[in-house]
Image 1 (cartoon, one colour):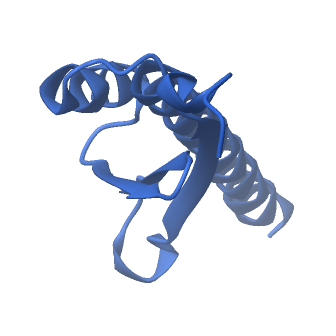
Image 2 (cartoon, rainbow, N blue to C red):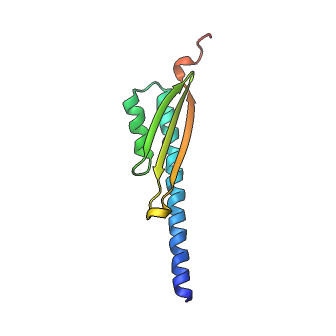
Image 3 (cartoon, rainbow, N blue to C red):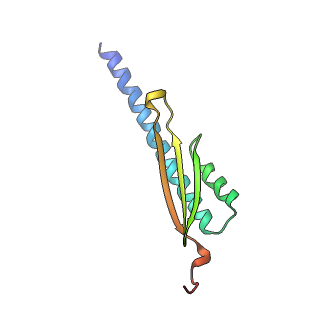
Length: 103
């Protein structure tokens, strides 16, 4: 009786570690995309930079709002049906082409 419970507990811990790792990768991907966008790189390069750091099956959205670039990364967690969650992260960076420009 104890062994199946321990096995289930171990599987839950592994799943939680995989989800935490995917969340950290989402944060890193959003930051990488925001840095690339702030440097005024082409949109394709910004998306490529974000997707390179993102987990598998991630979706990246890029938006400019005034002087800020916003990058959102969303990715599903690995796991069977009901254990699948959508993880997301957002990063913003000031566009370098606006620095030092009088308002």
